[in-house]
Image: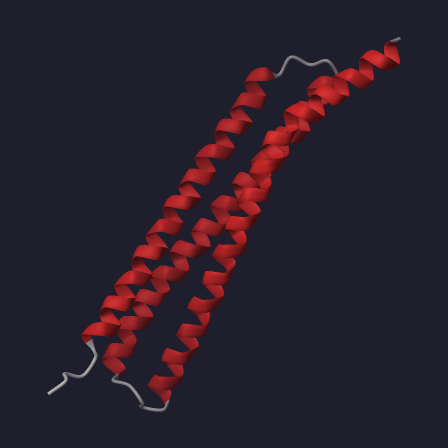
Amino acid sequence: MDDVSTFASVSETIRIAFAPIFLLAGIGAMLNVMTGRLGRIVNRARVVLENARMRKADRADCRLELALIDKRILAINLSIILCVASALATCLLVALLFISEMMHLEIASIVATAFVTSMVLLMAGLICFLVEVRLSLRALHFSREKLPDDD
């Protein structure tokens, strides 16, 4: 009979742990988007540097764009770090759920703290991501200003 109650208890814990696991999947998808953006930012930096070396572009414009690229890299890196930290906090949450169930520990406040920590880190990561998106739009505006007139 004890095995049946243990199985039911583990089954219930697995059911409860599904929400954080879906959260992990969502964070993973966001990290995929963020790393893709980081790759495109790095590629753009390479193009700007090459244009500056080959004198295909005004060096002052290149410096301005590279300064903006540096800000974008900083923002997206911080976003990735915060989202990874959120994923780790979520993993800790799942582990705590199982540990508390298997060892019959009353650690609800620790579990709640892990969840809140994960959410705060995710929100901070998404804010940094939004900052990077805004910076990229500024770069687009910068590029439009440099277009020649249609005279």
